[in-house]
Structure formats: structure tokens, C-alpha cells
Image (tube, rainbow, N blue to C red; front, side, top):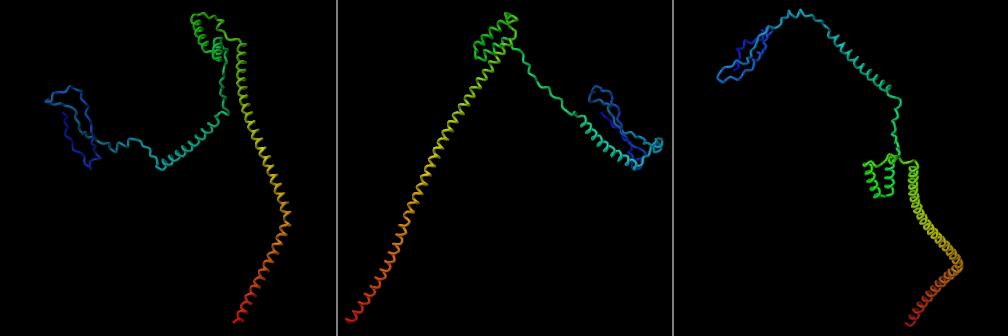
Length: 279
């Protein structure tokens, strides 16, 4: 069991400056097998040890250098300012060095080049058969070629490159085939352009005929208007004469009506006079 030794008297506030209390830990004993529960065990023990504090007289033996507070503040401020200025200066120097260290021109990147190697005979035959669409012949050739190659029946002359004449002929044949395809495309474009031209020409002729017909109808209408004006001008004297006769007839009609009214009034007046005489 752990036993706790009795504590000494704690210092009060009055004698705190003369003594101080420290806690010390006893060294751990070597591990031992666990004894039975009935026996007592001397294990770890904790106790308080009184330590004498250092006297003020001992401090005189140490050498101290007094530094005024104002000087310390000024030194710290000047160091801060120098540090800031130094940081700005270093940053400017880095910028200038970075600008000056940049190369005036960038090195040109190497452009990849395609190297054409001469074509061997078997590749030439394969390409030729594939370009002509002879797939069965291509399969047969590849089977026999690989069979001969495995058996070692091919001589070094069979594995040489194709002569330049055959390659040149093949290039010319490819160019000719491409030109033929271009000619067919141009023929199709020309035929479409011809059809479009014929269609536009027919539309132009139709609009031209329609314009001519409209112009003819316009001229005919202008002639009819002129003829009607001439005919109307020929009827103008007759209309004036008939207008004059109409006015004369209306005047005579008015005079006749007035004369009729006057005679009717006389007849009425004469009839009433005779009736009075009879009475």
C-alpha cells in the first residue's frame, strides 16, 4: 500500500518570503511480482520537502547591465523601420533582377519532322492490294508471306526496298486517281451550276414576257383613254347645246305653269261673280 508521510506546517503569509515549499517525488522502486493481498507493500511515497529560498544578498554576486527603457524602445523602433525599408528594398531588387534576368527572346521550339523511309516490297504489295480492294488476295498473300518467312524461304533480295521507279509510278497513279476524283466533283458542281443557270434563264424569260405583256396592256389602256377623251371632246358641243335647250324648256315650263295658275285664278274669280248675280 502507498503511505503518505505527515505534512510539515505550511508557511503563512508572514514567513512566505523566507521559506518555500516544494513537492518532490521519490524514485520508483524496481518492479516486483505482485504479493498476496494480505501482506503490506512499501511502494511509492509522496512527501513535501522544505527548501530554503535564495537570499537577496546572493543577487549581488551576479553582474547585471542596466539598459534604459527609452533606449530599448528607440532601438526596437529603428530596427523595425530598417527591417521594413530593407524588405521594400529587397523586393525592388528582386523585381529588377527578375526583369533583367528574363531572356529577350524565347528559343524556338524544335518542330517535329516526319522522316519517310523507303517502302519494302511486302508493304508495297499489301498497300497495292488494299487500295484495289483485293482483300482475298491480300489475305492469301499475307498467309503465304508469313509462312515463307517462318520457314526461312525468303532470300535477302525478297526483303529489299521497292525501287524508286515503282514508288514514283505509284505516286503518279495516286495523284491521277485524286485528280480524277476532283474532276468528277467539278463535273457535278458544273452540272448543278448549269441546272441553276437554266432555271434562272427560264425565270428571266418568263418575267421578261410578263413585263412585255404588262407594257402592251399599259399602252393599250393609254390608247383607249386618249380615244375616249377625243370622243368626249366631240360630244362636248352637243352636251352644251342640249344643256341650253334644257334650260330654255325649263323656263318655258315655268312660264306655262305661271300662265296656267293665272288663268285658273281668273276662272275661279269669274265663277263666284256669276253666282252672286243669280242670287
